[in-house]
Image (cartoon, rainbow, N blue to C red; front, side, top):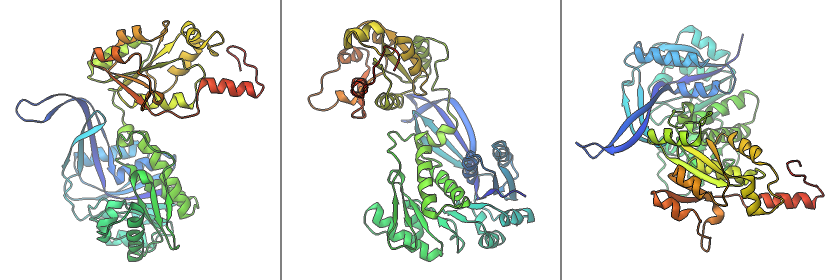
Length: 468
């Protein structure tokens, strides 16, 4: 008999409506959203189960389901994702959250249905499932399921590690739970801590208080871009920073679920609590960097070039009300600095066009020994990157002609053009003529094609054009 990760908690039905705002309503000072794309997904404990199943492990969800169209849709979405569903009858209507989004931002959230109702008794199959669970994640969204006495008794008696992701309106974790995972705001509400201090001091003080009060093994306080603070029986807290800074946060919805699910799976595999929290911070950071919940269903408002020309791509994006971003360069030996610039540029709009210097253009700029890699290879490598939507090769010393043809909304260059004393971009005046913006993005110091070639030569490597 299998031993799945069991997620227990309140499931919701989430719907994201994504569109374009191009005007203000004539009858009220509010933006008008022209809908372009809509996606439904499980929310609450349903999203936690979905994210756990995406880690290629067997997952079962114990949740309350109402007997309505929303409940039926929620059940379909959960099982379609490969999650085994164990429903408990829930009176009333299914809770729904509807987010209206544009430009990567939420304009409005509409909640409807789902007034908290006492759930029915868990069937025997649920109690048997908890007794053989590999690990248990309690995903409490304050709607009453985990207050059910028989369910709490089964959770307290479970042999598997229990991770409790709490809600301020929900009950305390069952004593003996291995780990509780509140965020900083939830922790303050759960403990009533109104003291001043840094994130570290507050998380440590309130986290230890919650650990003692609930009699749980440890409390991991999630703090967004600051990572997490683990409060355990040791004298000093463990601070776990994120592996890297996320340059642009599109949507943090579900980050806590990703954190808790990863921690539960790590504990199931025998990791220590400290190891589980480190893995959870890394997973939650990667999830947010990939777009969060919005990244689960990418709208077609971010088109990709699939055989069409850059001009066709730009026309499509403009017709959808999107933002066209362009950048340029030789990209002779593609390195991490190039990638950082391209990824940062792509996040500024709805498509990225790279204006690539031809071989003749590169020779005029860099000398007769360049480029190392010929034009077709450079274009092919760039086009293969997820952050690049189209590549245009130009033959002139500067990209003025191709820019005048494409007329991008944003022209991006690396950060070596930023700061006091930096040179004026030669394309800046041209781009401003059609109302475009010229921006710089951070770049990685010490990365350059010239430096790479020089280092290779110093190590005795002889470069033949096109071959290393």
